Every structure is written in C-alpha cells, then in structure tokens.
Length: 318
Image 1 (tube, rainbow, N blue to C red):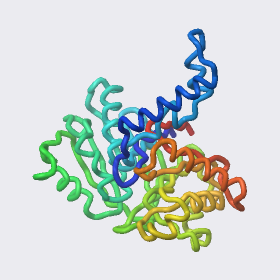
Image 2 (cartoon, rainbow, N blue to C red; image 1 turned 90 degrees about the vertical axis):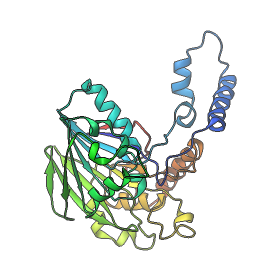
Image 3 (cartoon, one colour; image 1 turned 45 degrees about the horizontal axis):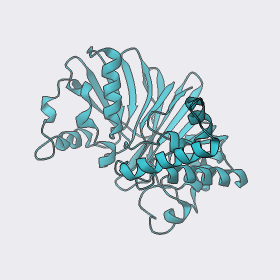
Image 4 (cartoon, rainbow, N blue to C red; image 1 turned 30 degrees about the vertical axis):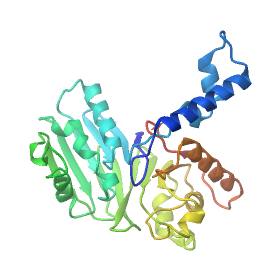
C-alpha cells in the first residue's frame, strides 16, 4: 500500500503567516552563522543535514485527508478536509485531466474539518469520473449537498458532473475495495466517529482520528487494542497534551500523545503517526511536542517501534 497524508491538522486549517515565516528565516540564518556558511558552501547539504524539520520545512496547514492507496484508475481516500483539494489537483495533473478516475472516499465523521475540502475537489466536476462514498453515518449525502447549498457555496452539488454513489457501512463487518480488506470501528467522539483498518499483502494501516481514549481506561479497552493490533502504520488522533486532555479539553473528543504511545505500544504497532494536530501550534511547537512524545516513549512500559509526526505530503510505501 502507498499511503500519503494530504492534510493532518484538526478542527480548522492552521495559520502560516509572515511572522511564522520570518521566525523560520531567522532560525535558518542563525544556524548558517554558527556553521560558518560561505559562498562556496553546499547549501543543499546544509539545509538537509543541519536544519531541523521545523526550520527547513513545515508540518502543513490542511485539515484531514489521507490517501491509502491507488491502483490504475482507482484511488482510496479517507476524509475530505482541505487536503482533498491538493489531492484532487495531483490526480488531475497525473491524469492530464483525463476522465475515468474512480475515487473511493471513506468518512470518519461529518464535522466541518473533515468535509470542507469537498467543494474544491476538481475530479468531482469532471464528467466520466466516479466517486463512491462510504461511511457509518446516515446523513453523508445530505451533509455534502447542504455544504454546497445557498448561501454557503456558489456551485450547487447538483452541478457536479461526476457519477456518485453512497454506501452505508456497518461497524465490525469486513468489506473490500481495490483488493484491500477493510474493517470499520465505532469510536468515542461527539456525534460519533469511525476508524478504519486496511489490510493488503500482509501489511496493515489503521486510520483512527477523532477518537477520545481516556487516560484511566485506554489500556483496558481491548477492542481498540485488537483494532490496532500489529499495524505497520497507525495514523492516530493525538491532538492534545496529557495535561490538556485530562483537564480543560476533557470530553472534547480527542486523545493525547501519552495515551497514543501506550495504546499503540500495547497493540504492537510498528510506526505511530501523530495526527489531527492542534491548529494553534506552529512548526516549532509541533517539533517540541514530537520530541516530548519520543522522550516519554523511552521510559514507557509500552511503546511503538517508531513515532513520527504527520505532515502534508508525507508518504509511506508498505
């Protein structure tokens, strides 16, 4: 399976403004001065080897959208946050605008940050494309149509040229798309949410966002331990710190980095990808959050083999 994260922020697209750009430039120049960079220096090596990710790059700004795989004309995607726009543009570029694409779009739930990219998904406007939509909520079609109704958006859903079909899924029942075995699981989130487990050719990816695992009960929730069991890649909601998740943001529907480490470790996960990032955090803060998480994992009783932070454009080949 080829996995690509097109959007990883939670709640609302993150800010990237002049002040944040200036902070990166300043940090890079300070590092260049310390390194004695001169006119004959290899700048690419300096950027790649001496600048941290938070300086040389960015975790991104888009809300959730994760491409799980593609095969021929078929594309399997989770959620339709603002990252879906970038995915749609890439599909159009790769195909040279040619119709015949079949996009399989699975929804975790229908909160705005997970549907707001759909009106900007160019393949939906192309006659000859097909979009199959799946999820556990009964109102997916109604939600997407309402989002493109007056006064919210100038192009009504009825003007989309692609062919659509809507498929209601039942939790804990296996089904198959593009040769990938998929299982959907009910999650703890206001209004309800669903996670997805994908298995193909001996590899497993789990997409589990917008789910609140309580610190006091997470490690006894064996249904989720089994859902995550031995995943090669777990993309998991870890929006909050332990302190926030157990105080001011308790019952907001999201998990924390400490629970993510312990639960994924207990399940034998190989790579934990921290997802649904807090939108107020800049790249420096997210890098610090990642380092704090890794430091905890070094002393935790249970921890995955590897911990990474999701970023727009991050790719995996499993």
